[in-house]
Image (cartoon, rainbow, N blue to C red; front, side):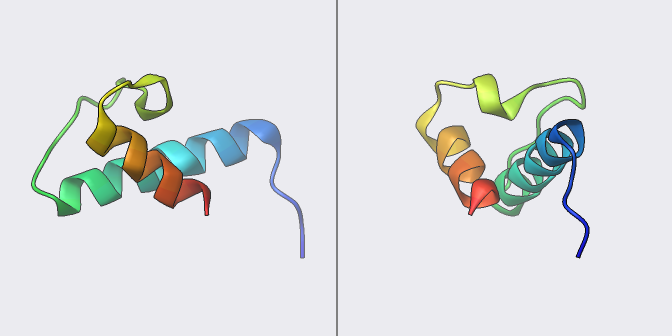
Length: 51
């Protein structure tokens, strides 16, 4: 199986975190960076995406 590059991994984490956040009924702008957030719910979505 091919390893993802750093930028691909970063983009995938962002996409998954936004999807998890959307499942909770929230929406963020496309250019919003979830990994830079300090909000607890957003941080939890990022943590899920990194698993």
